[in-house]
Image (cartoon, rainbow, N blue to C red; front, side, top):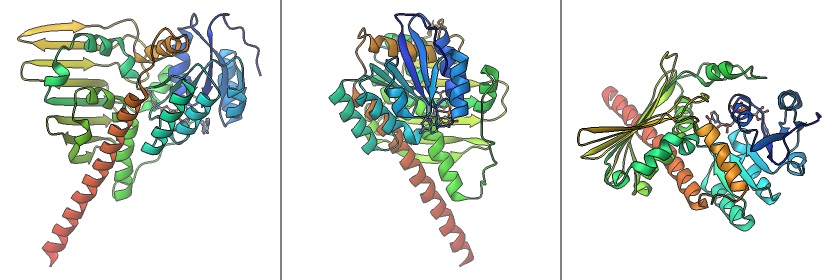
Length: 363
Ligand SMILES: NC(=O)c1ccc[n+]([C@@H]2O[C@H](COP(=O)([O-])OP(=O)(O)OC[C@H]3O[C@@H](n4cnc5c(N)ncnc54)[C@H](O)[C@@H]3O)[C@@H](O)[C@H]2O)c1
């Protein structure tokens, strides 16, 4: 345990899970926000990780959630553990009466968990936000402020992600303590393909699905037309609703030029948002509107969504801002879960068709 020389009058932060995302994303963001927030307590089930990450920031450490939630120095809690622990940890943090909770995406893994979180949030009044960082990016917020009718009139929506693997960014940002070795997937195994598709949606596409949903009023009727994986990791997924065509693309490869964009088109207007790559802390997204031959660019601004989400946590914890409705978080999660399920079903249906065609050819 280490003494903390934190600034007085700031909100104390406790972090559950001290892996690469805590080390390479949240601690650098928090280091820039010392006038608002101070890291007080780091918890990880691996004591060596908890201890060494806590020592970097002069915080207390522990290996139990109870110790962190019972620490009176902890006002707000960030949940950065693996996804299967998110729901129970969000609920425990709300029940501990903390002032706000930031949960890494996805905040739950199924609709039941989402409903439980919603009930606890309503009962305790603790504000919760999900670390879908693009929704806190000033470039996105500038798009929201200037998009006029576009969410109602858009007919075509695209989310496109071309990135190197996360580890490369993490290593640029900091020296990561403990990381398991990655293996090569067996692409001939149908279950591996399904897991890649599901993981791609719930782990990567999920960042921008809340954005897609803002442009899809009939999101409950989403249908998957085609779904393919991209090697070594990625996906190409075509979706539609009765009024929208949606394309989700991602490729994680050895690209020299990362790109992360979101686009929406109507008959007479287009919006393109270029986000900074994941793990990058400098600058913000840029939003470009094209209307009747005129182009308007908003941004880049001084910070992006990683800092934006922590500013939001501070505003929620001090009551200077209203939290998003629990229904918004649930709708975003349900949209992602529905797409993941429909994608896997679509891929199985394709596979069965191909199998039937092969059997027919040999009959
Ligand atoms: N916002 C982003 O850009 C972004 C990028 C990648 C990942 N993520 C999300 O961030 C989260 C963490 O990602 P990561 O890559 O650091 O994960 P990770 O699995 O590599 O590390 C998580 C850490 O949590 C610890 N842990 C395991 N079980 C725990 C428990 N029950 N309680 C507390 N700690 C526990 C592990 O020991 C490890 O140190 C995930 O939910 C992931 O989806 C966000």
